[in-house]
Every structure is written in structure tokens, then in C-alpha cells.
Image (cartoon, rainbow, N blue to C red; front, side, top):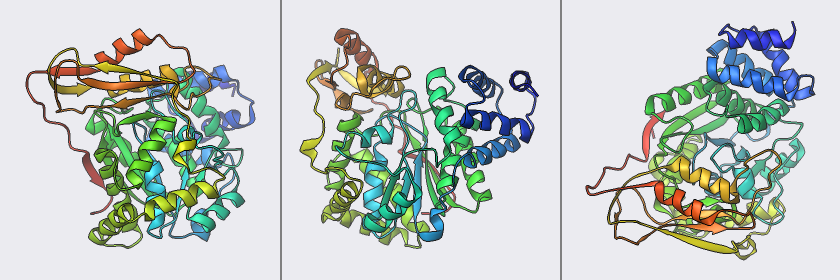
Length: 432
């Protein structure tokens, strides 16, 4: 069948056969289907959706477009962790060394930024010399050496996803449940850890804005994992405002180091601890004992030491002074007194992209020094003129006054104090 016919079938809302789905995925990985047709199919799926059977075939075809590392065979205790994407979501940079410091190996496929979110792979690029694993042998060596492997997609792991991921980012087809499930789980199953922790975001800064939609995504991801024999737990977590107080590459690495040293942003610290407890629970630890051990590692230098070992093993320089620094900063202040009642997290994410912390178009270079530092949270009482955030500017040319106005508009200020959403909306897959 001509691929145009396959696009038309999905455009018209028809169910695709396994053979048609495999033609789509193979065409993405071998170049036999052009970018314009891949984009059309992605848009058709985004609008029309895909049922569970189609999604399962899509996951497996994308998984099988490259090699399968089967890391769980050599490292049966290893855990993988994935976030569905948010703003100020620095968890991976803390979670990996923290969990490894407790003796549980962590293997994680890092992704680049997608849409208004900043990706872990881009944040790791801010660490001078840091090289994620691209080959199975490298991943095995890293886990044996430091207990952590951050991997980047290559022709070995789900190459079809690598192609489709970029096109989704540039065509407005990111917020599609079947495409998100296929992208995440094809990589997770190709890496092949036996255990998986999912952080499914919900709110203004997430791709899925409502609790029912986020829960649907969590359950879809967990169903694919279970069918593959992977032990999985998921948290549905708040993204009605940025998670941490930093957005951007070097800026978020600094935020992670603050938490690993026992301080840092309280929301980032608490969510990371909750996810880490789930990881240790899958490894057989009692939740109370796991939390106590994790908190001890944050206070006694064990987590910071694990970070240094992780960075050195990946070829990087762990010295915070080696991180890129912004060339200028711009303060954005409150136009009036009152309570912060809402924060447009997605809007702040797009501002971070605009000043350099993300890609506006294919081929854009990330400005590793650019970022946003948040000074207030929902529920805070403000005085007129109090700083809301600081724009950290790198080398990308930006309209400073436009960015200042957009940033100020991202905060709703009211006379009455609001009730912030809980950090964790739901726990799925087992008690903590």
C-alpha cells in the first residue's frame, strides 16, 4: 500500500494494521518515508488517536527499530526513571546519584528538550566533558563503575523514535497520548531495566493538564510496562507551577547540586525523595527505612559524592564553577501587592525556550547559560515591586522588554490566598 493511503486511513479515523504501523516506523528509521509524510502521520495520530492495540504495536516496532540492551540481565536490581516532561523538572539529576548512593543502580535514557520543557540531555550538556553512553558496552561499564548510566539515543536504541521525537517537537504533535506512550516505552523496553518509576506530570506546565488525563497516561504507560514483565510504579505529580526554582541547563545543574548537598528547593527535594523511596521499595526496602537512608545520604555527603563519581565516570568535570554562566540578568517584579494565585508554568517554559534554553526550530543550538530563576510560589504574599523571577541571559539575541512583559503576565496576583495543589495527586502500582 502506498504510504499516502496509510496516512489517509488514519486521517479518516480508521484503525491501522500492524503491518501499516511497522511500515510507518521502518520508514522513519531507514529514511524510506520523507519528513513531510512522517509529519502528516504524526498529526493524524495526534488528532485521531490510536487504540491500545495500535499503541502496543507502535511501541514494539519502535523498540525493535534498533538494538535491545537488556540491562536487567546483567544488573537485575537496576531501576529506570522517567518524567513525562515539565518545567523546572530537575529530578533526574538528583534522583540518579541519590538512588545509586544507596546501592541501587540507575540506568536512564536521557532525552532532549521537547516543546516548552527542558530535557535532561541538554542539562547534562552543561557539564563540561559529560558524555552520555551511546553503546551497550559503555552503559555496562558505567553501571559497573559508578552505579549510574545516563544514555543518549543513537542508532542502537530506538532510532525510529529519535527521528519522530524531533519531528513531533517541531510540528505541534507532542501532546498525544499514544505518541507519548510509544516514545517513552520504546526506549525503556529497549534499554531493558527490570524496574521502572514513572513521574507523570499534571497541570499548566505539563502536556496533560487535568488529573484524569494524567492518570490515563500513567495507566497506559504502566500497562505497556507490565505486558513486558517490568515492575512499575507511577506518581501523578503537580505541574501547576514549575517544580523547582530554576529553568535552564546550567541553572538546573546548580539547583540539583544544592539539593544533593542537603539544601536546595524544597519542592524539588521532596518529590525526588518520594520517587527515590519508590525506587528503593521496588528493590525490597521498607519505605520508612528507605526515606531515612536517602535523607542521610543528602546530609552526610554520600549523595554529593555519588554525583561526583557519576560525572567523572561519564567524562565530565563535577566542579560547579566549571558550569556556564549567564552574561546578564534581568529582574521581573510584581506590579502590585497580593497573593500569587496561579503561575503559567507552560508560559514560563516557552520564555526559557525563547531566551535560549530550548530549540525554537530544527538546528537551533541550546544556550547552556540561559535560564530563569523563580523567586515566588503559589500562595506567597507579595509586596509591590517584589522580584517574581530573574531572567538569566546567555548569547542568544532576545527582546528583553518583551520577555519581561511575558514573564510578568505569567503570574496571577489576587487579594485572597489560594490553596496550592498537593505535590502528589496519585500513587499507582503499589503502596509506599
